[in-house]
Each structure stands twice: as C-alpha cells, then as structure tokens.
Image: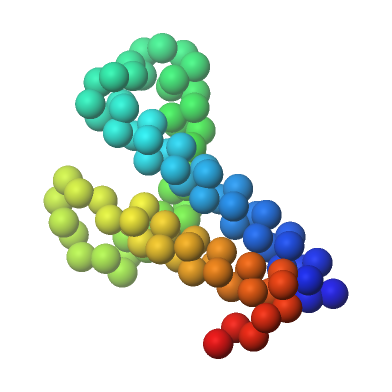
Length: 98
C-alpha cells in the first residue's frame, strides 16, 4: 500500500518538477528576448504556466525578504520538490525515511 502511494506521489512530484523547469526556462527566454510574448503560442504557454504556478509561489514569497527584481520563490520551490522526490522514492521502495 505504501509502495503504491509512494509511486503515485513520485509521479506527481516529477510532473511538478518538469512544469517548474519549463516555467524557469521559458521565463529566462522571454526576459532575454529570445522568445516574444506577441507570438500567440508563446504567450499561451507562458501565461498558462504563470497561472498554474502563481498560487504556489505566493505563499513562498510571503516568507522571503523583498529582493527587488530577483525572485527566489522558484528556487525555494525547486528545493522543496527535490526534498519531496527523495521522500516519495523512499516511500515507493519502502525504505525508512530517516
């Protein structure tokens, strides 16, 4: 039972990791003007990922100090996801957590 829960949790965390990586890469490409937001498909992907991840970033931003133009909330979320991947893989293979 724990193995099935760990496998499902690991799959969800891996999907969240790829969504976060895609958001970070597209954000960089837009900021460095490699991608243009006036292209409809780029705008849809960019704003769709923003709408998907903004509810997760908002609570993290409340705890972080204001750093001006640099947003550390994706980095904090990335660290949380890596931690959850470790926990989920241990649950999947029924190993002790600590």
